[in-house]
Length: 203
Image (cartoon, rainbow, N blue to C red; front, side, top):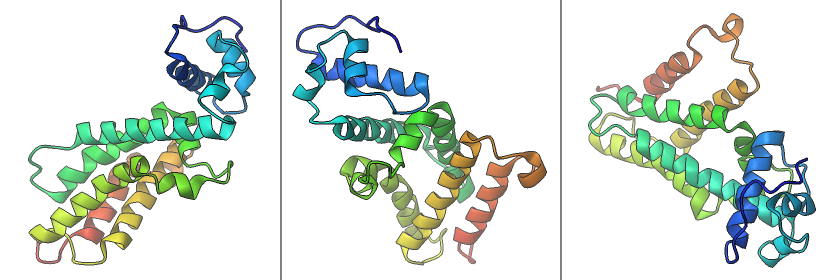
C-alpha cells in the first residue's frame, strides 16, 4: 500500500480524487480488497473524507463499476463501423473492442460483473449499464428491419451475443483461451458461429 498521494488534491475535487485513486488501486492491486481508509490515505485526504460522497465502500465500488460501463460504452461506440457491408463486418470490430476492454482492464471488468456486494442485478439495470447492452440491441433491431438478421425475439438474440463475448472475455482474462482447446483464433471462430446463427436464411 502506498502512503504518498498519487496526485495533488485540490479543494472541491474530493469526489474525483477519491474515485480516481480507487481506480488506480483497483488496477494496481488487481482487486477491490482495499478499505476506504486506505483510499483516503492514498488520496492524501482525511480518513473521513470519502464518506462525504460515499456512505460506504459498496457505494464507491458501484460508482467504479458504472464508470467501467461508461468507458466500455465509449469503446464500443468508437469501434462501430460507419458503413458495414455485412453483419460480420458490423459485429466483429465491436466484439474486438469489448474483448480488448476486458483484457486491458481486468480488475475493473471483474468488478462490473461481480455479485460480491449482492447488488449486481440492480447495477445492471442502471441506465449506464443498459447503455452498453443497447448497442447490441440496436444492431439486432436494425438487422431485423433490414432483413439481414432472423426475426426472433431480440432479447434471446442479445443474450446469446452477450453471453458469447462476455464468456470469451472472462476466459481471456484468466488466460484460458488456449489453442489446444479453442484453436488459434477463438474470437473469429465464435463470431462466425454467432453470425451464422443470427443471419437470415434469405441473405
